[in-house]
Image (cartoon, rainbow, N blue to C red; front, top):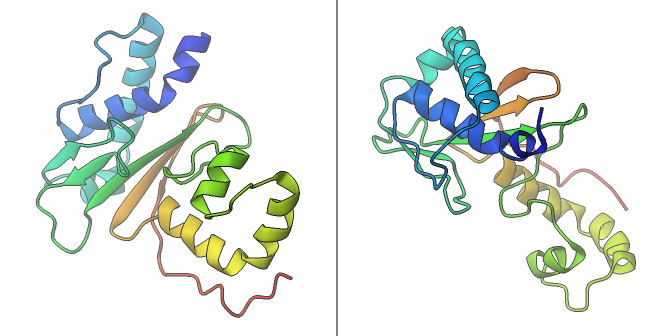
Length: 178
């Protein structure tokens, strides 16, 4: 796989979902390489085989809202208190990890801004995170797997697509970390 295709995996997956949902792909990307088109076709065929995903997603009025770092990649315009959002997460490595949209690949400076820490440093974060884990974990969980949202996770290295939805909230308060 070319480096350019590897970088564009998130956009490729969004394009696949747009094709699957029959909604317009709102993006500045106007052309795809042959390698990318083959991957789009392969992923589309894999999604078509997933009957439970079809049952969950079809019959709704989806719009692609992921452009410009939108919080969700797709929004259901006919929201019915059941499923309002669809989020796409991707990875290209064996041990895939995903982060909430607001966090991304955070730097020390960005983490400092998110947690409202002035003059943030690695040393300070090493103390701050364990002491504030009961606040941090719910924030990360809520923003990775939000309510009324299904997350479709694609691990390119494993060629696997996972459908994720929170069954219930996790209560982090009784846990002792420090």
